[in-house]
Image (cartoon, rainbow, N blue to C red):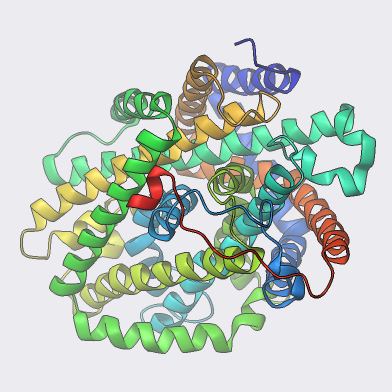
Length: 512
């Protein structure tokens, strides 16, 4: 591991201590994280809402302003990957397991268990369930990812800086980016990445276990989840070691095909007309109430505030903690695209896919619950999807397809994570060595197992919110730094500078 830097050793030491505490005193780790999580959500919930909405505003400004003509790279650079492959890669890295885990569960939960604004089981609960699910998984989430990725890609490919979070802050911090302050920022980014990815791996293991338990009666416990994580670890390590243009690219395309097939089956066998009507109605409500939802903190209604803490604040923390990982990965595959093109596709393409996905899966689950054909709300979260699929023709075959999709999402999230962590801890090297990626793969596996062992899904959520808080301040600095650098670049280019003619991508990805 000759390429490893001090950032690697500091971050690895901190994570090793957390893993050790989780093994020796799991109850203490769970209670400690629960206390800090409650403190942050109760005290700084307002801050999370304002910060993430501000990130959306920055992205929209860059989309419509003249700065959008600037490329993430030199002005004559062309994209390395075709548009479909690029979207598949960023989508697989950006949502992955979470989309499958929450696809049926979240809308159903908002409708039948804990409604955002009113009584459960009502027509209003149906509308609120889909509206807030859209809110959680679309533009706000991808604005966080997009802002971090845009900053990294700009400084990596246009300014020839290393692929480090600290490198994007030179216009703000100056020479301090190469000293202790810069290293501290990079360590925070690594910690947030490990915890964010490990949390998603934990969700994936729990849902695979839930599917196997529901279908075949396999015990749902930490022992089974341990075996699942070990098996999938071997798979994602093999993919990660094969490189970006082989394992990750191929699996990302396979993911999109399997996800599209699963979605099409649920759409056909589910409540098709109800899904179409729900999609149309909810999309309008989402757009109409966009600003209101963005700042909703419910200061005088403790019940609604508790719901916001459990769902909206949790999601905003999840996107922030995942943003260094997803940001570096998206930046790595986005060279040659203009800022306007980047923002348009990163904000809108995955959001549209999420709208369709949740309308299909959430709409089908709600329709089954409302009709009385299935009591899906009584199932464990990880079993909701499989309980819904059991009511369709060829339910067993579709459920097995769903488990395969979760496993491949598991692999793509984890191998992308090891690749990115290798970059972050080798001074920004764009092709980190295999030994370092293997070490990070083991660390991700260990962290996922410890969090599951110490408190299951709740411990995963607690750690996510905690890790996101310090990194949110880093993203604010990245936004300021990016706008300063872009304004300076635009002045140097001049108002009449014409863009170079677009050329066809030449790398392997462009052939897909």
